[in-house]
Length: 271
Image (cartoon, rainbow, N blue to C red; front, side, top):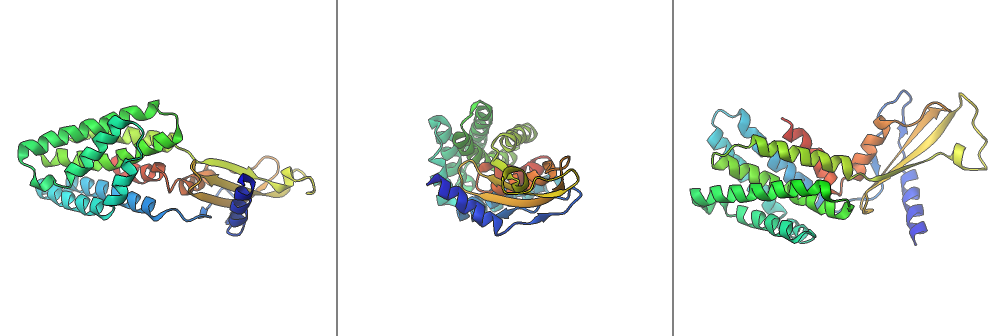
């Protein structure tokens, strides 16, 4: 069954290969399997939320900008509320699952909170986000890390926005969240491999030094939910795919995991 799965993936990939131009130009990744729509919605939700938070830093009217950010974040999270709550339930660590759920549910009513209650909520949400961020490096299992990465991406904008609404600083929390998202991007990597017929197939003539040979490049998410492929021609034996060619494939194959969200929000947190 597993063999048929791989053959199907490779056949789909080979039907949509993109040639990598010589000279080390980036490869364009092509997805062989469409990711679930919910994953795409979650990435959009988090990017919209973090973008809204970043907007108040350059605003002349910071208080009004923060309120507008609240409206945008509420709109974003409400658009995928059921999916987010369902994903929260998959978090294996009970304490983190509880605090993430609590932060998300309470945030929906943030406009109804009294000032003192809002500040307490901001501090609780901050504690949850920091606890998730601190736990991530100790998790080696990819599925559990992915669950926490998703939870962090939802709680992060909630905590940042609540702190801004109550006059608390956001810089230290943003720095902590950036480090956590960078950790996810660096460790929740898809599986990648290459297929070089001229070197791996006995029926192919062996290449001579200076010959150009084709490389098929593949990456797949750890949970097999997304897949990307590319193709390049390199001079044998000293040339081959480099990070320039692999990076876009890894990113495309991460689109259905929390690494895809991390890649999207890291530039926003660095501002």
